[in-house]
Image (tube, rainbow, N blue to C red; front, side, top):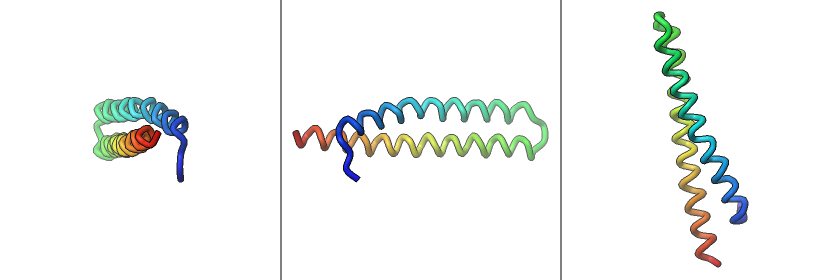
Length: 77
């Protein structure tokens, strides 16, 4: 799908807001894991933290793609 420069810029801003939220959520789950003694509880929160890390990585990949598309559109003008 082709996006306009304005759409790409807005998408970029949304992703830039989302990345720190994923980092914060990861930190939250890591802290929660330290509060529990049972391995099952600890593993649950570590797994959730790992998912948030994956979300952050996905968002950073999307951000790279968006930046490349923005650069491409700007060079075409």
